[in-house]
Length: 277
Ligand SMILES: [Zn+2]
Image 1 (tube, helix red, strand yellow):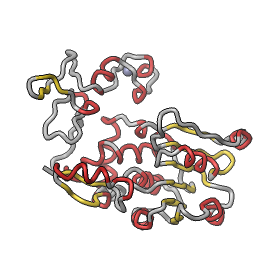
Image 2 (cartoon, rainbow, N blue to C red; image 1 turned 135 degrees about the vertical axis):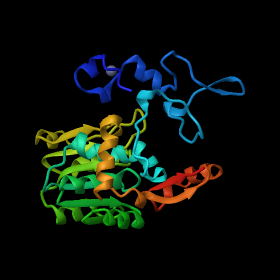
Image 3 (tube, helix red, strand yellow; image 1 turned 90 degrees about the horizontal axis):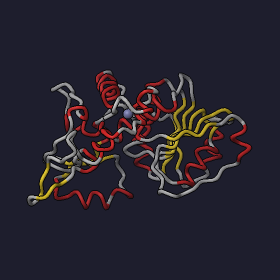
Image 4 (spheres, protein in one colour; image 1 turned 90 degrees about the vertical axis):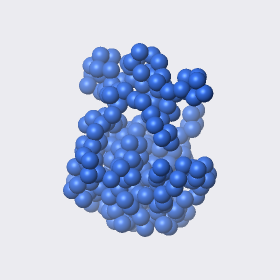
């Protein structure tokens, strides 16, 4: 919920809004400063202001984006986070160009969408990097032109595909050492985009001279998404066949199976679980 009046909003960067309304909304508070939800009579707060995994929630009107009735909700539920993040990383943050070579480290529920958007943006070579074979296959099925097993010599394999390095390398895992790797995979003048969320306080190091060669390191929080602008763009991509959402759904589970699915996240061979109720 960009407030429209803070310094960031006035600089036309509402994705960085720091206004009170937005901070309240993320805390699950309505405009009057209260929560509409109760648990055993006491105030309860929807997780992240959304109410993930709740059967019902109350959110502000500005937080809701209406989509057409014929779109499948058990696929479009994915657009609220991982899909807008992956697509936004390509279109909002990196601004991938036609003919670019793109490397994507991590081909899960976000990375797969980086690949789909890179293809839609016109990238010629899209190199998927992951340690799980099934995820590399998934990546190729949505547009990756090459797959590299992360357990091997990634730098050498990438150099064989694109000797100068990638125009854009995305880190979509959230591990500092992979952010170092992403930067090292770029060509002079190339861009490394940090999409994954690293542990707070973690650090990564890089060869300062390599950045002197006009390389850029870009942070990317949630794909710099403005929901009212970007959800509609996802619908257009979906209808035009540029965005496959069904392929992301590895399993459909009920609410009682949520914790088992969360435990299995680190080793899953598919992109996403969808909870139906
Ligand atoms: Zn604002």
